[in-house]
Length: 638
Ligand code: ADP
Ligand code: MG
Image (cartoon, rainbow, N blue to C red; front, side, top):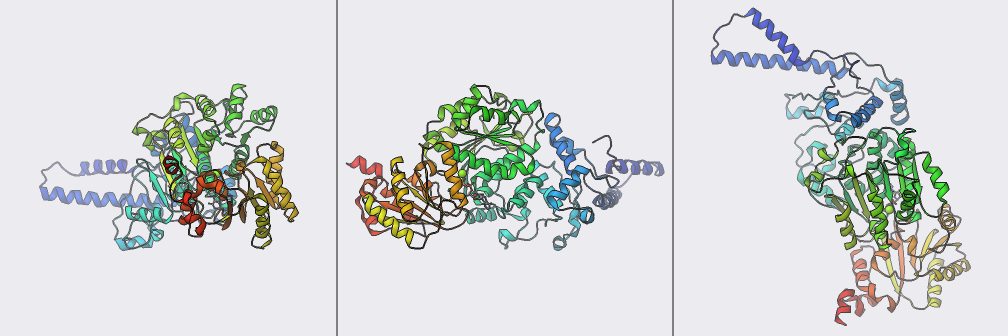
């Protein structure tokens, strides 16, 4: 790129020339202080004129096209640092010819055609800051701002923001007197500490850990590259969810993340999008490099969850031309090995099966430096700790972050390490925050930033929770019939039971009531499970009867009712169960049948119901002896 670039005379060169001319015409003489000052002033004015002229000229010139920039990023991984190659870039003299690849990309993602291409105002690409001498009032005119430039080399995030603004023809306001304005009305640069505090309160975001970047106010400002923003638009996510607002900027700064948010709050996209932004910067996988394995792995506790993550990831990844493969039990090893042979940037896996593939040498993790653990607490609960360890041991050791505050410094962590490596980034997502999570975080994560949306373990705010004391299977079946025949609920509904053998009993009753039921529990084969979920999603089945296996992460849209035919054994599982409804901002109802066998959960259940604005605590629960003190305390007293 550099050989073909023509540059205009730099300011220094122009000044140098001018100085020489002056030196030739003026005889050496003693200058008084006043004279020196006058001369300096004159010089300053002239300097400004030159800068202005250069800037006017530059604002008319075009930018280097995106794929070239992408190439620049790719190259920087194998050579110099992004910023250093960027620094030397100067405005071009002539309108550059438009790279056909860039043209296609623009037409496809941004709707920029030959007709409207010229109309888009572009900012110039330079590292020199121009200080405007304007009145505060002039700020609002905005027209001069198309050519503003930075002093400091831009970070990738800022660079992405700039590209996005530019492609959308957006000219940002700079700082004006915005003290009395709500954050939504302010330019990003006008956001004060107080605004961020209000913003975080508005979205129920709290963070822990040093130097945590501010959340993002919109997709535009996320710092995600334009290619990804275009796919978000195509997918139809208008606004980021709270966890996405908080976690994406942290993940983009190469920071380790612990994300805690209620189920159905969009955690998947909050790790998938920064991951894709990382992969975009990596060299494209070739016949040779694909044998070194994926760039990233996502671990999930169950097959269903892994497949769901795969679906959400593919929404974005396939539009960007990246492959992702899921490695889960239930499919033959041969099938999965075949899938892997074609190469994939992202592998989504359950820990057991992934270890299997690593040990059989079907998969290596030679260039993987992005690790995501979804539902991490559950993985540990299910006894996957050893497998998770084995997987992390199979990763290259060269890219492990130092265990000190350097790990909080995004400038350091984003730097290139040699080979294809950047420091390894590890992220952990969960809906509840039991002590086990803190333990594994200490083991695997380096100086993580923790993001908590709402209270950890809090039920989805959009779920109305009702509890009823009904004991005995017969009475419960009758009550279930009344609820379903009330006309208040439409398919799909999910009914939870505690043990496999109850699934059939409840499913039979549902069928008798005219609700076509399918079953999901650990005793079913992979195909059967997948079929059951598919039937529910496609509307071929009206109800799913499931054990807690389906309680975590399973995303079936528009579930109107979760019925706990039996109360979950603990409040975490209960939270996950009811989180199957009220997803993606929709409302839902969860009804739970209680009996005295469930006393261990009464205290926490009462707490949860009283914290939920949509729910009320029935007297029988409120006054119940077991609801007066926490389970552990009660046990200790007895
Ligand atoms: P979680 O992992 O937190 O339980 P998911 O990632 O499964 O939640 O997301 C729940 C649902 O919300 C999915 O169907 C997903 O497609 C949808 N979703 C995620 N983010 C957004 C968004 N920003 N706008 C609209 N829908 C979204
Ligand atoms: Mg999830």
